[in-house]
Image 1 (cartoon, rainbow, N blue to C red):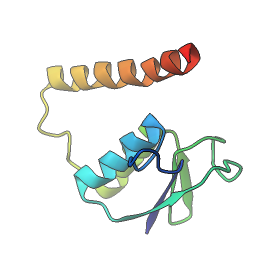
Image 2 (image 1 turned 45 degrees about the horizontal axis):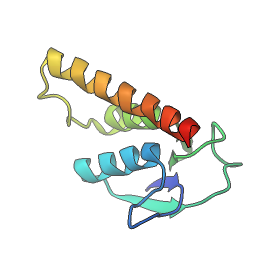
Image 3 (image 1 turned 90 degrees about the vertical axis):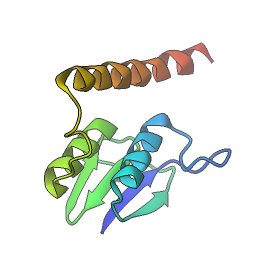
Image 4 (image 1 turned 90 degrees about the horizontal axis):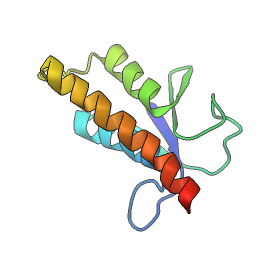
Length: 108
């Protein structure tokens, strides 16, 4: 079984980090079964950060790498209906939101 390791819940959300929420939402949208464990210690994380997943004997860190791995390994077709323009827009929005997180964190 796949295990998602992410930060603890906050204000009713499954994760208090947008990258963990992105992976969690991906699991739910694809209907993949997984075990969700909330942790704070990142020593066992492959990149020293959360979220990360373990699947069989593999550990994968970074939300984009996790999603790419899951699509490839499980043949997920969630994005197959998108046009090339929609794929580009998806990439633009994901990058903007991911980068905006750091700007907002710094401004706090």
